[in-house]
Image 1 (cartoon, helix red, strand yellow):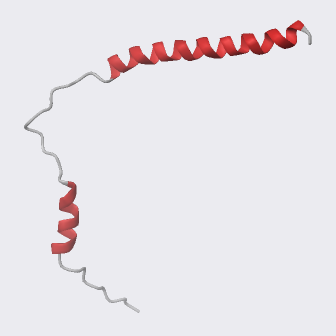
Image 2 (cartoon, rainbow, N blue to C red; image 1 turned 180 degrees about the vertical axis):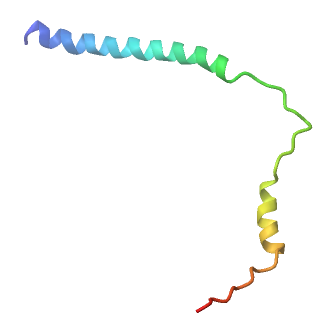
Image 3 (cartoon, rainbow, N blue to C red; image 1 turned 90 degrees about the vertical axis):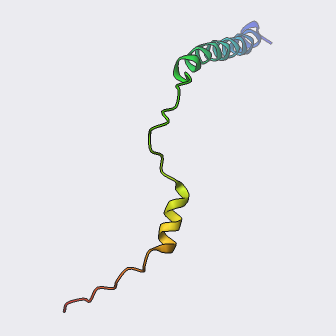
Length: 69
């Protein structure tokens, strides 16, 4: 086996390892910046997702329209 045939896969593996390590370190810093805890505003209105289903059940059926010919 030629030395380049041995060295290239070895160096390729090292390159992948260090790129993955660098990405982990870079993204760890970004998480701290992007996901900062912000206090919630107690006065803002938040819709209730269950209300949509309840409105469908409680509302009258839509009126059919006559088609003018």
